[in-house]
Amino acid sequence: MADNVKPRVRVPSSATAGEVVTIKTLISHQMESGQRKDDAGNVIPRSIINRFVAAYNGETVIDVTLEPAISTNPYFEFQAKIPESGTMTFTWYDDDGSVYEDSQEITVG
Amino acid sequence: MTTLSRRDTMALGLGALAAAFVLPKVAVAATDDAIAAFTGGASVGQGGITLTAPEIAENGNTVPIEVSAPGAEAIMVLAAGNPNPDVATFNFGPLSGAQSASTRIRLAETQDVVAIARMGDGSFVEARQEVKVTIGGCGG
Image 1 (cartoon, chains in turn green, brown):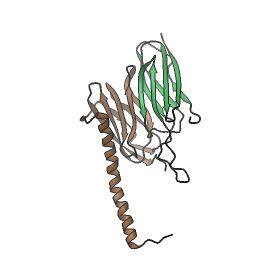
Image 2: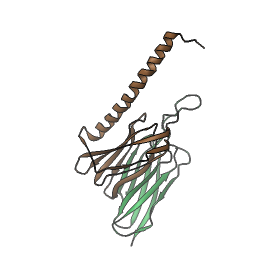
Image 3: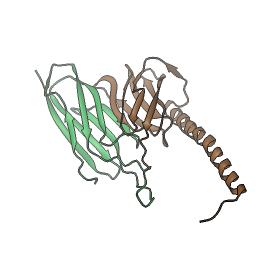
Image 4: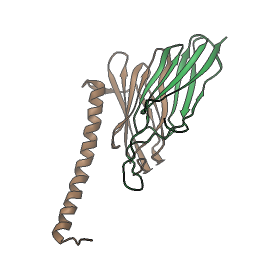
C-alpha cells in the first residue's frame, strides 16, 4: 500500500429530491507515472490509482479510468443527481491492489 | 573518454535528426490507435462537447481541465504529445447529474489535448485544444 493515502470528499449534507449537486474529491497519492528516473538512472516503477468510482445507494454516478497522466493527488469534480436520502460511496483502486474507500450521507428533505 | 571522429559526429547528428522526425509520428499513431480503440473506427464529429483547458500552463505537472458533453455516456481524454497519450476515461452512470467532470492532468510538453465523447445514440464527437506548457510534467 502506498503511504499516507488519505481520501477527502466534499459533499453537501442535504439536498432536495432530484437536485443535482456538485461533488469534489481529492485523494493524496504520489501517482508515480513510471516515466521518472531516480538519481541512479533507474526507472521508478509505475504506481498509480487506476480507477475511481462514485456511487449513490449502489447506483453509479461516475466511473473513471485513470492513466499515469493524471496529476499527483488525483482530484475530481462532478455532478450527481440525488433522488432520495442515502449514502454516496467513493472507491479508489490502487495498482498494488489496495482499495481506498470513503462515504458520506446525504439527507433529502 | 573517447574522441569522436568527424564521421561519428555526422552519424550522431543524423541519428538525432531521424529520432526527432520519427518520435512525433509514433506519438500521433498512438493517439490515433487510442481513438480507434475507443470509437471502434466510427467517424468522429464536432460539436456537443466542450473541453476547457488553459491556453498556457506554467507547470505541466498539474493542468486543470474540464470536459462536458451533455448526453454523453463516456468521455475519453487524450494528450497527444505525452509519452503515453491516454489520460482518463469518464464513464457516466444513471445518477450522473450532468455529463461533465474536472480533474488535473500532466502534460509533457506543449501539445493538443483531445476529448472524445461517446454519446447516448452511439455517435462520437471530439474537441481539441492546444495547451502551451512552460515546464513539462514528466520528470526524468
